[in-house]
Image 1 (cartoon, one colour):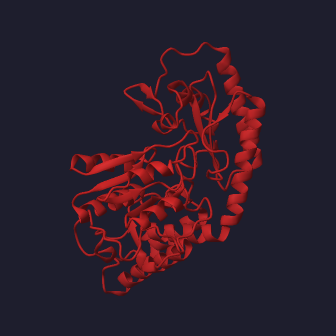
Image 2: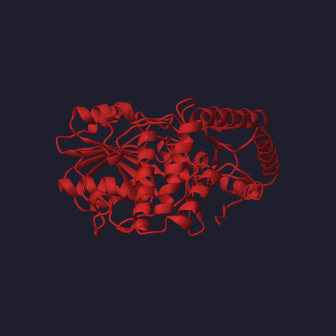
Image 3: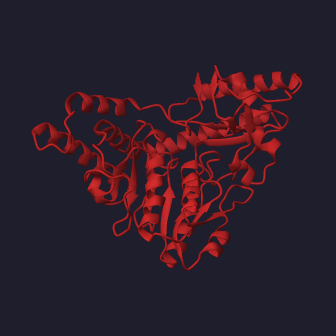
Length: 384
């Protein structure tokens, strides 16, 4: 199996799993306990917090541990909404479901939400964000990079707009952290979501950066863990894994960016040579170094993924409900037709992929496409 689905999740780095296993065996105490084992577990948490803050370029007391990206996004949006009790929120039309669905929930509670559109290359329209700002706008939430296309959003410009108007700004950086150079040093970002399993850490653990002075209410209630913002006994081994993943990313990020960019471009150029009809979805350069979203006219991506699933792991980006296939809302918002969106596939390379794997993946995909082109198209694509 050639794994080209690193935007869905990444394998756990051996250094990370070693750190986690060591923690599970030795530092199993409750971090809230006052005895030696409790203090050792607490030390693991605080050491990891320091490592993560150093990696991101922020203060250690601005890092709060959560269960992952969905919780961090929910805490950001709902926490700000609870503080203000009413108001207007701006987000983009291509956000992750953990942001979109949270906004829909807040609309049901009486908050107003504007979903800023994107252009044909998948970039949020800055003028639309600017024109959407109201006197009662309490939050702007825009992802740093899109999970499907990898397109990097103008977060610096948007954060400057938010700061100018005194609006809290949240960034979902789930796909960017650990894949590209990134720093909060000097940034006006107020809230930022970090997801461990997107850059070779474990699942079930994440973090939320909360700039000091940001007014955020808790959404879970219990004891006073995580400086009173996020109750619940901490996932010590997961936190150790996230800390180690950040340590490795800081050490290796230059090589990681160079390697994945080379493999991504090699993948696209080789596929385009073999399948001339291939089109790129998203901006050519303003995207993650590892992400390639393409469409192959005349084919249904779910059929292609099904044909190669035992040899190459990839993603369609479309959704299946009750046996019916729905086109990606991200691609639709970029102006693609249903047919174009349904013919799109996402390939996301990782730090451990090799040139030989890319060559083999190109061969496998090309053969599958050629075979599919010989057969009549299925009338009703089947989802599994």
